[in-house]
Image (cartoon, rainbow, N blue to C red; front, side, top):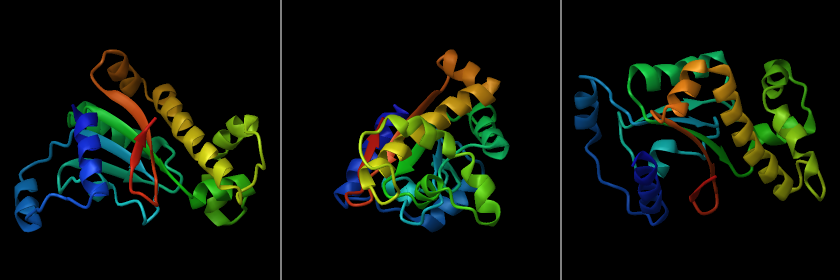
Length: 191
């Protein structure tokens, strides 16, 4: 039901039929508590408006953001809080088209803390060696292939590094799924 709700919200977003909301009232109502049904792990990219793309308002989603939508200990702990403590039923790892972090990982960028950050995305680059065609950040098809593999790798990491979330998923208490956002159309494609 949560996935279906996100899909329906995305259809409204794509057709520019977003729900009118009284954000001031939502802020006041949310101060009493929060009960989001989903945890979304998204990229830092400013072109990926998570709440809008699913037509959700204040208090509807837990949203974690990091360039390249990978997980680390802090994000895993946040997901565990969202699901085990607060009752979210879905973890959605959301990659997107033309991701700068993916391109930087492909290019093996070395710059400050970005270097360490990219080590968490590089497994997806390695996983993408089977791509037939030019394997550079200038090839949009390769960037998309790596981005989708990064979503899959991130889901695998969530399951392997969080016994709590793995157990919840194995028992059917939550689902852990991936999706890919098309910047040109606004469509979210569930993988």
